[in-house]
Image (cartoon, rainbow over all chains, first blue to last red; front, side, top):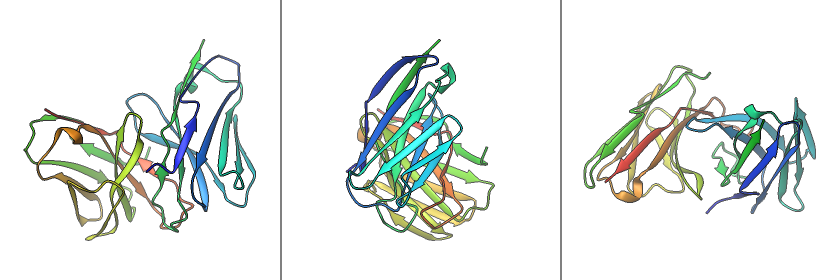
Length: 112
Length: 114
């Protein structure tokens, strides 16, 4: 069964707008990661947030984590057409080992 | 880019035939993984390896076997392919056993079972 579920499943915005996607998970975790997948390509790691962190930034990315609600959000500011991709959250499901469990993903379309 | 090569990248086969997908890495990473990606399911872990000859099952291991005789190669075998195994298969590698390391993914192998 999936540990993470992303919301929305699809998001369409204009360049320059912000994009927010959410991830909910079921069990306790040690950390949560976000990955990006361009069409027809493999996944690329974006950012990791630990369970004792509430917010983390990396360039135009901002990730928040609320362990009490078992949820995380990924904010992409000032979106560009090149941000068009699918975004996945991944959790370790508190296994203590790098067996990531991925969500179903959010498809982001950024139009020029 | 991490040195991960998957082969073949595309394969069409018939039900009942054996299929082997290969993942080759040049990073000398200890940990290797096979995931499958299907619409509506995201990525699901099939098998993983934590060293040469050391492998274990993931979430969806039925119908699949793996082997790792060398650090750089991780093979995924479908002994008798079924239509439900039509999917895109991704290999991933990780340098760390800790849960703070990132995974590096290959470009995927698209398998169609007719």
